[in-house]
Amino acid sequence: MFLALLDFEYCCLRKLTLIYLFRMKPLLFLPSMVLWCSEDKKTNPNYLGPASLDEMARQIAVAEGPSGPNTDYLFHLEESLKQIGCEDPHVTDLVAAVRRVVSTKEGA
Image (cartoon, rainbow, N blue to C red; front, side, top):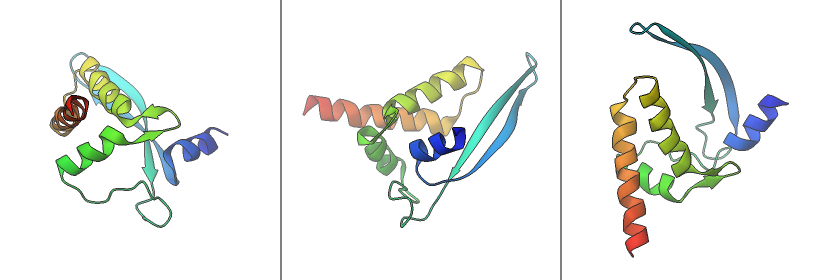
């Protein structure tokens, strides 16, 4: 049932992998799930494909699924990473790009 819900939510779920994130100071193990979705545009119409940061930001700014806007997911991801002491430069850059897109749309 859980996998069926994930497949509905994330469209074309191919595989689910359990991994453990590890940090030395302070010592921390976090069980995490990695969702692998189809990269086939025929079976997964939401897959953007290889894209620039700006292209990704424009899609994330307007995309929405059953759980809500993709912006919420991205912003919560950045906050969650910060809470465990992990900074991902790609996520940080993407958040900044999405915020620029959103603020431009709101100001239009």
